[in-house]
Length: 234
Length: 307
Image 1 (cartoon, rainbow over the protein chains, first blue to last red):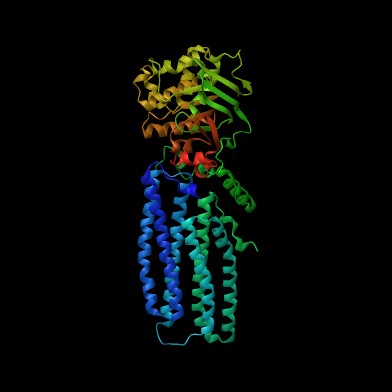
Image 2: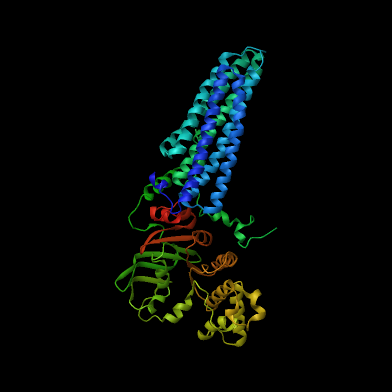
């Protein structure tokens, strides 16, 4: 992997690529925090924490603008080729995926406020268990995906891509599971829909983490493996 | 709608789709086969040529070509095919042998004392280094455009008419005039000079002079056009005109271009050959060479890490 990090003759070019790489990792760190706090807010039924998560989105947006700017400046100034070109493309795509992960975390935080913001009704705790399980899967995928973007670890990237199937199965299982509560007592339907929206947001987070791993593989190999989609072939 | 000097850039033209060599990576197994292949080969650091050095229907074939300048080995056992109707670019650091190989292709090196060429170079299956080959018709078949535009100190018309006249390609004045017009049109210069054909060629701008030299080369009906850094003395607009011209001319001729501009090679050529210290390191589809080169030396050179 060292060969990807050999220095350029023009040293400032290295600095610009490094800056872009760090920006992506910084956004990655921020959205990991957003997602784990969103899950914590759900667990502790804490609308105040949820507000903080929503406020963090401004910072993610600000860094996204910076990263986009870095990408266009590098392309305009350096005309990157080969692994540099692939880094710039991978960084640019990863930033959009990360930004969307942040949006999903905000969506979850919004549900926390909606569900626990007033004393209206006591939620069904059994239904919340599903959120914990799929939430942990999504968070692990996301943590791994951001980490491999740092070290360009292709084997781990393959594992993140492979784990996506488990995530999809969990999601489908949860849907069936939640449906049984609704069938049992139709008054559960409002709460079940909220939980489904949260689970869907977590499933999207897992999907974006999967995309991040694909961008890492593209950077390392120069091949686009998106067509593979392991979760659809079975 | 504004049109680019490069029609390739406008949306209705699907040329851009070709940037990727028309390969289909949708087959899953193929993706994995290729990515492993890429990974294994990318650590190749020896000096065997990697990539597709051969072509299906070659116009020129080079086999085990060695070139010495006196005792110095300038080119070391290079084998390379140049396909019909393709633009191939030769890239590499100064002194890597790319211009030397280019000059071998029309025996331009014959004029340099101490230069010895070994191996085999064939044009349309005919050995161009055979003893009984006359280099004058060879150089008409394989024309050359140089770095600095070098029109003859004669009129624009005479610059283009000179070649056809000495090669006896026109039987009448009218035919000659027609040939001059066709050549100037193909070189994209006709509209700019048609009213000034009697003016000296040296009075044109640099970019126009270069297109005049291309018209002069075209006039003798070549099969191959060799270009040795044809745009390095030109401004970006004149460069764009020449690049557009290269794109049009490849329908009719085989074009070999030596360039120091990576972006130019990426824009104008379908295949790219990378040379390093007299060796041919890598040949492949241009899109692949610039996005995922196989050899570390190629990668380092094109991304500016060479040091």
